[in-house]
Length: 137
Image (tube, rainbow, N blue to C red; front, side):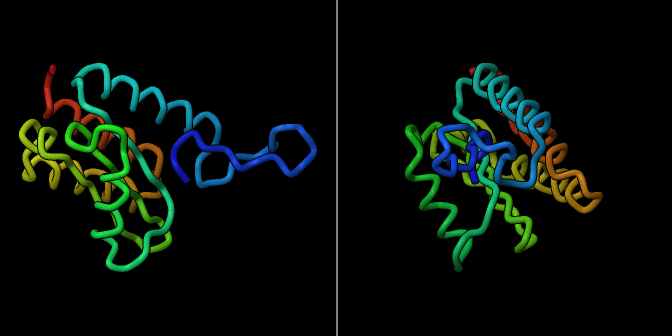
Protein backbone atom coordinates (compact mmCIF):
# COMPACT_ATOMS: atom_id res chain seq x y z
CA UNK A 1 0.00 0.00 0.00
CA UNK A 2 1.21 3.47 -0.76
CA UNK A 3 0.34 6.18 1.72
CA UNK A 4 -3.08 7.57 0.90
CA UNK A 5 -4.07 4.64 -1.31
CA UNK A 6 -7.48 3.34 -0.42
CA UNK A 7 -8.79 -0.14 -1.03
CA UNK A 8 -10.98 -0.23 -4.16
CA UNK A 9 -14.71 -0.11 -3.62
CA UNK A 10 -16.39 -3.49 -3.64
CA UNK A 11 -18.74 -2.91 -6.53
CA UNK A 12 -21.28 -0.90 -4.54
CA UNK A 13 -20.27 2.44 -5.98
CA UNK A 14 -19.45 3.75 -2.52
CA UNK A 15 -15.95 4.18 -1.12
CA UNK A 16 -14.79 1.68 1.50
CA UNK A 17 -15.37 2.45 5.16
CA UNK A 18 -11.86 1.38 6.16
CA UNK A 19 -8.54 2.09 4.50
CA UNK A 20 -6.53 -0.99 3.64
CA UNK A 21 -3.38 -0.69 5.70
CA UNK A 22 -1.84 -0.14 9.09
CA UNK A 23 -2.75 3.55 9.41
CA UNK A 24 -5.86 5.35 10.60
CA UNK A 25 -7.27 8.18 8.51
CA UNK A 26 -5.76 10.71 10.93
CA UNK A 27 -2.34 9.07 10.64
CA UNK A 28 -2.58 9.07 6.84
CA UNK A 29 -3.39 12.77 6.88
CA UNK A 30 -0.38 13.45 9.13
CA UNK A 31 1.91 11.41 6.85
CA UNK A 32 0.51 13.17 3.78
CA UNK A 33 1.23 16.55 5.39
CA UNK A 34 4.78 15.45 6.28
CA UNK A 35 5.32 14.34 2.66
CA UNK A 36 4.00 17.66 1.34
CA UNK A 37 6.21 19.68 3.69
CA UNK A 38 9.29 17.59 2.83
CA UNK A 39 8.67 18.00 -0.91
CA UNK A 40 8.01 21.73 -0.70
CA UNK A 41 10.84 22.45 1.70
CA UNK A 42 13.53 20.60 -0.23
CA UNK A 43 12.53 20.49 -3.88
CA UNK A 44 13.02 16.72 -3.70
CA UNK A 45 10.25 14.15 -4.10
CA UNK A 46 9.57 11.95 -1.07
CA UNK A 47 7.50 8.77 -1.25
CA UNK A 48 6.47 6.21 1.33
CA UNK A 49 5.67 2.57 0.62
CA UNK A 50 4.27 0.34 3.35
CA UNK A 51 3.80 -3.33 2.63
CA UNK A 52 5.77 -6.37 1.62
CA UNK A 53 8.61 -6.68 -0.87
CA UNK A 54 10.06 -9.72 -2.56
CA UNK A 55 13.58 -10.97 -1.85
CA UNK A 56 16.08 -9.54 -2.31
CA UNK A 57 14.29 -6.71 -0.56
CA UNK A 58 16.81 -3.96 -1.36
CA UNK A 59 16.64 -4.74 -5.08
CA UNK A 60 12.84 -4.70 -5.03
CA UNK A 61 12.88 -1.32 -3.23
CA UNK A 62 15.29 0.01 -5.85
CA UNK A 63 12.96 -1.19 -8.63
CA UNK A 64 10.06 0.67 -6.98
CA UNK A 65 12.24 3.77 -6.70
CA UNK A 66 13.10 3.63 -10.42
CA UNK A 67 9.36 3.64 -11.22
CA UNK A 68 8.83 7.00 -9.51
CA UNK A 69 8.22 10.04 -11.72
CA UNK A 70 11.59 11.66 -10.91
CA UNK A 71 13.85 8.91 -9.55
CA UNK A 72 17.00 11.07 -9.59
CA UNK A 73 15.35 13.63 -7.28
CA UNK A 74 13.38 11.09 -5.23
CA UNK A 75 13.65 9.51 -1.82
CA UNK A 76 11.67 6.32 -1.21
CA UNK A 77 11.01 5.11 2.31
CA UNK A 78 9.91 1.48 2.15
CA UNK A 79 8.58 0.11 5.44
CA UNK A 80 7.96 -3.62 5.67
CA UNK A 81 6.21 -4.15 9.02
CA UNK A 82 5.61 -7.88 8.60
CA UNK A 83 9.21 -8.44 7.49
CA UNK A 84 10.50 -6.04 10.16
CA UNK A 85 12.61 -4.17 7.62
CA UNK A 86 13.14 -0.64 6.41
CA UNK A 87 14.77 0.48 3.18
CA UNK A 88 15.49 4.06 2.19
CA UNK A 89 16.44 4.56 -1.45
CA UNK A 90 17.77 7.89 -2.71
CA UNK A 91 18.25 8.98 -6.31
CA UNK A 92 21.54 10.34 -7.60
CA UNK A 93 20.67 14.02 -7.03
CA UNK A 94 18.89 13.34 -3.74
CA UNK A 95 21.93 11.40 -2.45
CA UNK A 96 24.10 14.49 -2.94
CA UNK A 97 21.73 16.40 -0.68
CA UNK A 98 21.22 13.59 1.85
CA UNK A 99 24.41 11.55 2.23
CA UNK A 100 24.16 7.91 3.36
CA UNK A 101 25.34 8.83 6.86
CA UNK A 102 22.24 11.00 7.39
CA UNK A 103 19.99 8.38 5.82
CA UNK A 104 21.31 5.86 8.36
CA UNK A 105 20.68 8.26 11.24
CA UNK A 106 17.09 8.81 10.08
CA UNK A 107 16.65 5.05 9.69
CA UNK A 108 17.86 4.41 13.24
CA UNK A 109 15.42 6.97 14.58
CA UNK A 110 12.57 5.45 12.57
CA UNK A 111 13.39 1.92 13.75
CA UNK A 112 13.35 3.12 17.37
CA UNK A 113 9.84 4.53 16.86
CA UNK A 114 8.69 1.38 15.09
CA UNK A 115 10.04 -0.72 17.96
CA UNK A 116 7.93 1.35 20.33
CA UNK A 117 4.84 0.59 18.26
CA UNK A 118 4.59 3.99 16.55
CA UNK A 119 4.68 3.22 12.82
CA UNK A 120 3.13 6.50 11.68
CA UNK A 121 5.23 8.59 14.05
CA UNK A 122 8.38 6.86 12.87
CA UNK A 123 7.58 7.60 9.23
CA UNK A 124 6.75 11.24 10.00
CA UNK A 125 9.87 11.73 12.10
CA UNK A 126 12.02 10.07 9.42
CA UNK A 127 10.60 12.33 6.72
CA UNK A 128 11.30 15.37 8.87
CA UNK A 129 14.89 14.29 9.54
CA UNK A 130 15.62 13.52 5.88
CA UNK A 131 14.12 16.83 4.75
CA UNK A 132 16.07 18.73 7.41
CA UNK A 133 19.32 17.16 6.23
CA UNK A 134 18.48 17.92 2.59
CA UNK A 135 17.89 21.59 3.36
CA UNK A 136 16.26 24.06 1.01
CA UNK A 137 16.49 23.24 -2.65
